[in-house]
Length: 155
Ligand SMILES: [Zn+2]
Image (tube, rainbow, N blue to C red; front, side, top):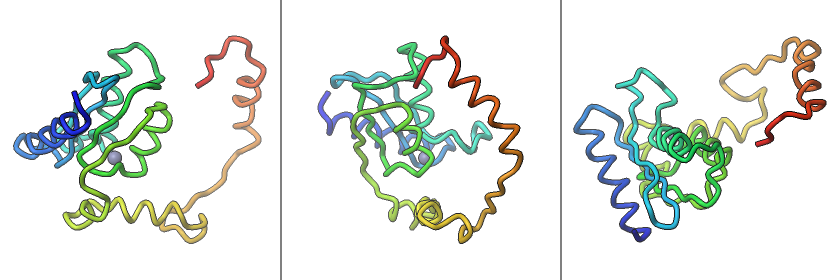
């Protein structure tokens, strides 16, 4: 399938999602033009604030391919990814990100990803959520174990 066909699929998923009680977002993950996963937003249906279309699609794709690494895959999302999804896309090593609506379009209908993008760009003391450091000495043990481990799978 072409990039436009894959995006039209993501857009169709976003439209169907609204009709089925989900948020107005859809995403497709493809490898060499072949669909690996397709999903829509299911935050309210699943009672899961992380169930954005992109995250749902990543979970499907990794389960289907049996790997945490989606190198070689592209994502087609009906809206520019929010910071959470953008982070998930980077962690998944997806190659290219195609989007249709942008974050300002999303903000206009009440999905204010733009607000989170602004928060991230601020120094922690200026953000609306407090970031409180606690027990770093005790937490270091896991990091040291990881560093010393010969059996770890790096990602
Ligand atoms: Zn998202």
